[in-house]
Image (cartoon, rainbow, N blue to C red; front, side, top):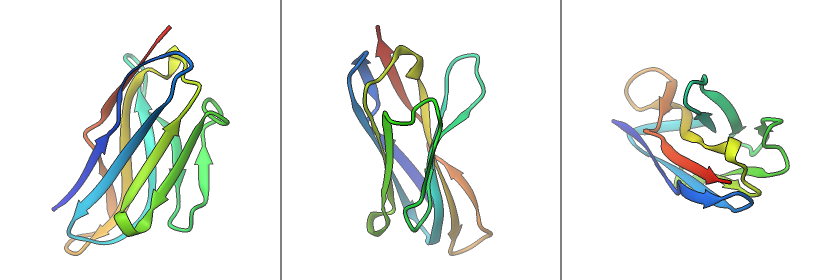
Length: 120
């Protein structure tokens, strides 16, 4: 079984910072891209940032310059450092990993989500 466990969400005032973590564990053969997505009430889930095994990143324009994605391949963990937070960043943040388990096909796995709330 594969699990993605997120942590680090919470309530913060506008202008503040939070750091999200997502650790993948279980019967994992290889991990390819990892990333963060978010979904606000009434909105579709949207990409925030992704990173490849080699460290290349793709960051949404809406958070560019404020959010940074990084990963630790040895720990199968991806991080999202969020700074200068705005109320419009309020959402449930989900971790996604494109990986190949020891048994089964390569596929995307999702974490359970962590709430980030930014107050004005």
